Image 1: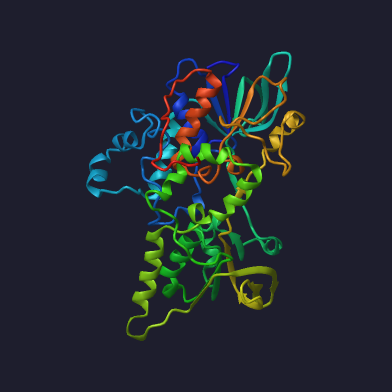
Image 2: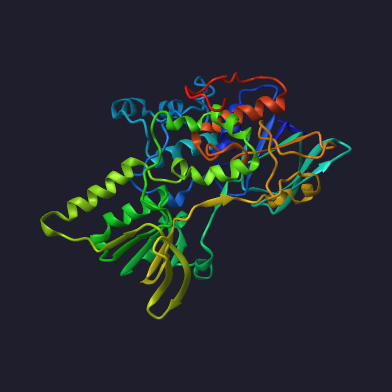
Length: 430
């Protein structure tokens, strides 16, 4: 493909990789995708042995839009000679390690994906009516200009750590995204504290629980949430992760949307039932015949202060319902405290033409296009940066292919992918 491209993809995570895979067979769409990392990886610090994907394998990069695509998970299995083992395994939720390998297989096979190239800035050339990106080659240390009619931002999210812990970050205090990379620093610890009761927190806690006997440490699990609660996974509850619900959510007033998303935390911030079962089973079996487990599990606890001393880390905590203050001494803290939208600093040259809401967030239309001044005829599209406008399905892998197809349909001005008009039995709204 030669410039100007129809699509400039910035960041190669699952969502932009879905766009690359769906754009690949389209003869009239030229696309290129850049990522500054040397190669593909997907949450490498959380590829814990035994952890599975929370969504069915059909939530791959393409299947829910184009089941015939050569980039489907089943196609990957066929290429790896794993179709028969997968058939006999009868698994709907695949190992996270295998999903990571599938994504890498696609990323390394698609000619449009270029790693080791960091997009430094994106500006608008009003004369040529094109976006111009400065792309830095990590290996050659050279910068080139790439022109495109549209840009799709898929730079993902970044870890969030509570304010009191930030000055202490290092080998003793770290985010769960670094969990596997920090295994050496956990050795020898006598007391380990896990913060956060989402899926990541539960998986970290379960892994530490399973290795507790060998490690000889006391284990603690604290969360601000009111309970170590299961994710809403009923058939009708899952219909909140459909395009039907996304359309309904988009039509709600902004203040209603802002209040609704945090109230729906069990839809996207809780723990799958299998992980909860595994934790309870581990605790149950270890307490047979009067056995005990040196641990504490407490909801409704917020960390309001933290300090490092000669005896380790001290956490100042508040029990939210009792309104009581307690101090906790520990050796290590794993903060499974979530992620937030990564700010695309490379869009700084476009700041004067980007429209934002009162909270400083992008205004995003139904096609995932950022609202720009009318003089900018090209489109800036976003992936996984629209929770405030599109709802809880934003980070969900199951909606990734549909969003990518919607973007391709919009920027091509045609309909290379036919999308269903009804995706839920529930009728959202009246």
